[in-house]
Image 1 (cartoon, helix red, strand yellow):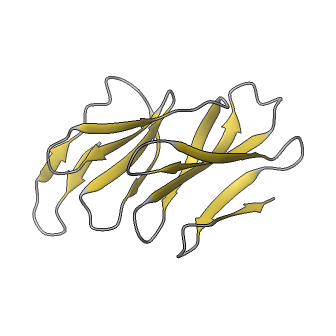
Image 2: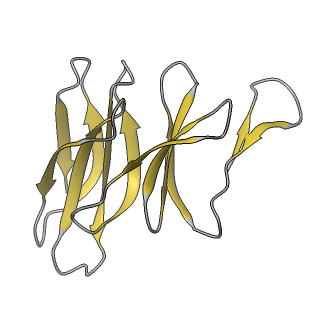
Amino acid sequence: VYIWEAEGDRPRRALAMDGRNVEAFALLPGGRRVVVATNTDIAIWDADTGERLHELRLTCGIVPHRIVASSSGEVVAACGGTIELLGGYWMVVWDARTGRELGSIRGGRGHSFCQVALGPTSMFEALGV
C-alpha cells in the first residue's frame, strides 16, 4: 500500500503487506492514520512512520470488503462476508484509538451488509441488501 501526497509524483510512505491481498482501506480524518484490510487481518497504521499501531481482531471470520471511519476518527467499521460464506455477512465496529472491538452484527443468510456508515456521534448504522 502506498500513501501519496496530494501534490507530488512520489509516494510519501509504503506500508508492508508481506504478500497479503488488500481488500479495503480508509484514511482516518486528519490523514495521519490509515486502516488497511487484507485477506487475513485489519490494521491501523501510522501514515507518517509506516508503523503498525493496532491489529483489529476478526473474531467472526469476516473477509472485509468495506471500511469506514467516523468523522472524529475514533471509531472504525468494516463489513463483509464470512470465510465459510455459510454464516452470512457481518459488520464489525472497533475503537480506533485502542483497537478494541465495540460490537458486531450478523446479517445471516439472505441478508448481507454491502455498505456501512458511521454517524457523527460514532453510533453505527448498517444498510442491508
